[in-house]
Image (tube, rainbow, N blue to C red; front, side):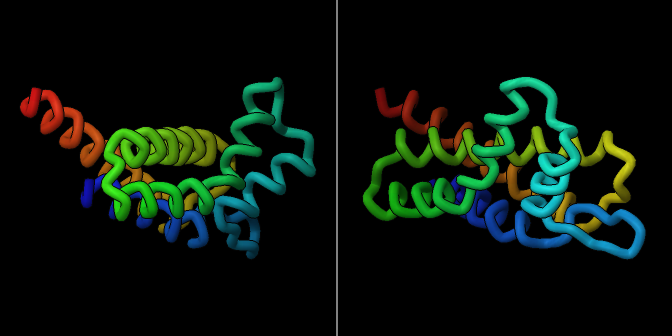
Length: 130
Protein backbone atom coordinates (compact mmCIF):
# COMPACT_ATOMS: atom_id res chain seq x y z
CA UNK A 1 0.00 0.00 0.00
CA UNK A 2 2.96 2.27 0.64
CA UNK A 3 4.12 2.25 -3.00
CA UNK A 4 0.63 2.99 -4.34
CA UNK A 5 0.20 5.81 -1.83
CA UNK A 6 3.62 7.28 -2.59
CA UNK A 7 2.94 7.17 -6.33
CA UNK A 8 -0.42 8.88 -5.87
CA UNK A 9 1.04 11.59 -3.66
CA UNK A 10 3.86 12.04 -6.19
CA UNK A 11 1.31 12.49 -8.97
CA UNK A 12 -0.59 14.98 -6.83
CA UNK A 13 2.59 17.02 -6.41
CA UNK A 14 3.59 16.64 -10.07
CA UNK A 15 0.18 17.97 -11.13
CA UNK A 16 1.25 21.39 -9.84
CA UNK A 17 4.57 21.36 -11.70
CA UNK A 18 4.78 22.74 -15.25
CA UNK A 19 3.47 20.17 -17.76
CA UNK A 20 3.51 22.24 -20.91
CA UNK A 21 4.78 25.40 -22.51
CA UNK A 22 3.22 27.52 -25.19
CA UNK A 23 5.26 30.55 -26.13
CA UNK A 24 6.71 31.86 -22.88
CA UNK A 25 3.90 30.56 -20.67
CA UNK A 26 4.60 27.45 -18.59
CA UNK A 27 1.42 25.79 -17.37
CA UNK A 28 0.76 23.09 -14.81
CA UNK A 29 -1.73 20.32 -15.54
CA UNK A 30 -4.69 22.21 -14.09
CA UNK A 31 -3.92 25.32 -16.13
CA UNK A 32 -3.63 23.22 -19.29
CA UNK A 33 -7.02 21.60 -18.68
CA UNK A 34 -8.55 24.98 -17.91
CA UNK A 35 -7.07 26.49 -21.09
CA UNK A 36 -8.43 23.58 -23.15
CA UNK A 37 -11.88 24.16 -21.65
CA UNK A 38 -11.76 27.92 -22.33
CA UNK A 39 -10.66 27.32 -25.92
CA UNK A 40 -13.50 24.79 -26.35
CA UNK A 41 -11.05 22.03 -27.30
CA UNK A 42 -12.73 19.32 -25.25
CA UNK A 43 -15.05 17.31 -27.49
CA UNK A 44 -17.69 15.04 -26.06
CA UNK A 45 -19.01 14.16 -22.65
CA UNK A 46 -16.08 11.88 -21.80
CA UNK A 47 -13.57 14.71 -22.23
CA UNK A 48 -15.69 16.99 -20.08
CA UNK A 49 -16.01 14.39 -17.34
CA UNK A 50 -12.26 13.69 -17.53
CA UNK A 51 -11.48 17.38 -17.18
CA UNK A 52 -13.78 17.69 -14.18
CA UNK A 53 -12.29 14.55 -12.64
CA UNK A 54 -8.77 15.96 -13.00
CA UNK A 55 -9.71 18.89 -10.78
CA UNK A 56 -10.75 16.35 -8.13
CA UNK A 57 -7.31 14.68 -8.14
CA UNK A 58 -6.00 16.53 -5.05
CA UNK A 59 -9.01 15.33 -3.05
CA UNK A 60 -8.61 11.79 -4.41
CA UNK A 61 -4.91 11.79 -3.46
CA UNK A 62 -5.89 12.82 0.07
CA UNK A 63 -8.38 9.94 -0.01
CA UNK A 64 -5.63 7.49 -0.99
CA UNK A 65 -3.50 8.70 1.90
CA UNK A 66 -6.40 8.50 4.36
CA UNK A 67 -7.38 5.02 3.18
CA UNK A 68 -3.77 3.88 3.61
CA UNK A 69 -3.60 5.32 7.13
CA UNK A 70 -6.88 3.60 8.01
CA UNK A 71 -5.59 0.35 6.46
CA UNK A 72 -8.27 0.12 3.80
CA UNK A 73 -6.34 -1.45 0.91
CA UNK A 74 -9.29 -1.84 -1.47
CA UNK A 75 -10.26 1.83 -1.12
CA UNK A 76 -6.62 2.96 -1.40
CA UNK A 77 -6.03 0.76 -4.44
CA UNK A 78 -9.20 1.88 -6.19
CA UNK A 79 -8.47 5.57 -5.67
CA UNK A 80 -4.78 5.19 -6.51
CA UNK A 81 -5.48 3.36 -9.76
CA UNK A 82 -8.13 5.94 -10.72
CA UNK A 83 -5.77 8.84 -10.07
CA UNK A 84 -2.98 7.10 -11.99
CA UNK A 85 -5.25 6.34 -14.96
CA UNK A 86 -6.36 9.98 -15.12
CA UNK A 87 -2.76 11.15 -14.91
CA UNK A 88 -1.64 8.86 -17.71
CA UNK A 89 -4.60 9.84 -19.89
CA UNK A 90 -3.85 13.53 -19.42
CA UNK A 91 -0.16 12.92 -20.16
CA UNK A 92 -1.05 11.24 -23.45
CA UNK A 93 -3.32 14.14 -24.41
CA UNK A 94 -0.71 16.77 -23.52
CA UNK A 95 2.04 14.81 -25.28
CA UNK A 96 -0.03 14.58 -28.47
CA UNK A 97 -0.88 18.28 -28.42
CA UNK A 98 1.27 21.00 -30.01
CA UNK A 99 2.28 22.19 -26.53
CA UNK A 100 5.94 21.63 -25.67
CA UNK A 101 6.22 19.31 -22.71
CA UNK A 102 7.81 20.28 -19.43
CA UNK A 103 9.31 18.16 -16.62
CA UNK A 104 6.06 17.97 -14.63
CA UNK A 105 4.61 15.68 -17.29
CA UNK A 106 7.53 13.26 -16.95
CA UNK A 107 7.27 13.32 -13.16
CA UNK A 108 3.53 12.76 -13.44
CA UNK A 109 3.95 9.73 -15.69
CA UNK A 110 6.63 8.26 -13.40
CA UNK A 111 4.45 8.80 -10.33
CA UNK A 112 1.39 7.31 -12.06
CA UNK A 113 3.41 4.26 -13.10
CA UNK A 114 4.64 3.91 -9.52
CA UNK A 115 1.07 4.09 -8.20
CA UNK A 116 -0.09 1.44 -10.68
CA UNK A 117 2.85 -0.81 -9.80
CA UNK A 118 1.95 -0.41 -6.12
CA UNK A 119 -1.67 -1.32 -6.80
CA UNK A 120 -0.57 -4.39 -8.80
CA UNK A 121 1.67 -5.41 -5.91
CA UNK A 122 -1.26 -5.00 -3.50
CA UNK A 123 -3.47 -7.21 -5.68
CA UNK A 124 -0.78 -9.91 -5.90
CA UNK A 125 -0.28 -9.83 -2.12
CA UNK A 126 -4.00 -10.08 -1.45
CA UNK A 127 -4.35 -13.05 -3.79
CA UNK A 128 -1.52 -14.78 -1.94
CA UNK A 129 -3.38 -14.32 1.36
CA UNK A 130 -6.45 -16.21 0.13
